[in-house]
Length: 193
Image 1 (tube, rainbow, N blue to C red):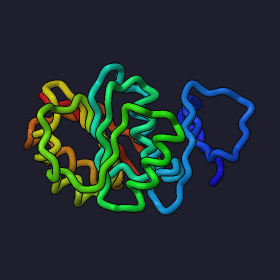
Image 2: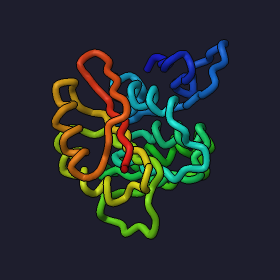
Image 3: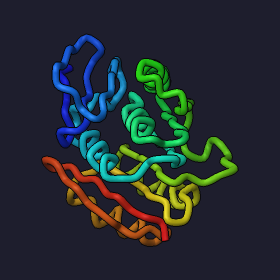
Image 4: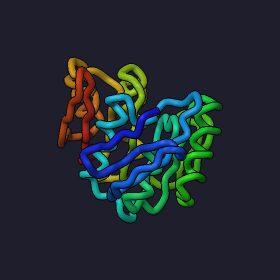
């Protein structure tokens, strides 16, 4: 794994990399078998969008957390708490290790999927870097768990899928705010109205 720099603000590296230059945000990831080392365009798109989204004091959900990289970024950006989960046991174990390695004490990681847990509160930000089919299937659940004026940040899909996701999001009360793309991949930032 080579170090990755996103928007010249966030360095994602393995523990053994020595980097002389300092960046505002630095995340150490031990990848193992989980998704989210920073090398994939969708992870870079999500981090890039997070850099522009106010996290301070917010309650965040990381749906399909993989290595936990987005949860760690939420922590670094000042989130009050992050609830992270993944269906894959390897990912959960890896995310917990990475959360501990980055001293992100306000991040809880568990195994399961959206709908497995009842929540007594809504979330200010929901992060989901999964794939188009899962995102479409879970869109109404994201709406249910997003606070009024809260944000939904999505990636894991191709540019040609943007209109399908935007249409599904509008049907459950989201308004698109910003779209970014890298290679053939895209990300969407939406707000619940």
